[in-house]
Image (cartoon, rainbow, N blue to C red; front, top):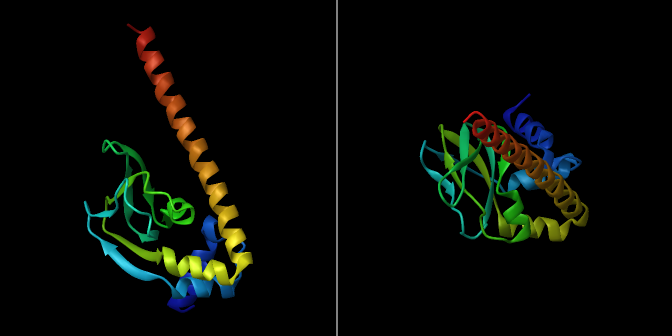
Length: 158
C-alpha cells in the first residue's frame, strides 16, 4: 500500500470524516498542507480566528484554557479545531505541541468551497462534528464530576 493510500485510509477512520466517500476524502486531502510543530510551539491560540483545522498525524498536543490550564492531551491520529472552523467561532482553547507533532492543515476557505460544491459532504461533516462535540462534552462532564468528587472526598477527610 503506497503512502497516499495509507493516508487516505487513516483520514477515513477519523470520526469527522466517517461516511465520506473515497472521492470526497481525496478532494479533502488535496486541500491539505503538511506542517510540523516542535514541543512548545502553538498550533492555535484562544480568542483568534478559526482559519484552520489540524489533523494530527504524529505526536501529541496539549489543549489549554485561556488561563493556560491543561484541559486535555490529544495524541495522533485526531482532529483539532474542526468545530471552530465549521462554526466560524473564534478559538475556544490554545493548542500547543507537547511532543514533536506533524499535521495536515485544512484551511477554512478551501473547505467551505468543497462543502459548497458538495452538499452531501457538508451534511456529513456537520453531522460528524456535532457527534464529536457531544463526545467532548460528555468527556468534560466526566472530568468535572471526577474533580468535584475528589474535592468533596478531600473535604470529608478533614
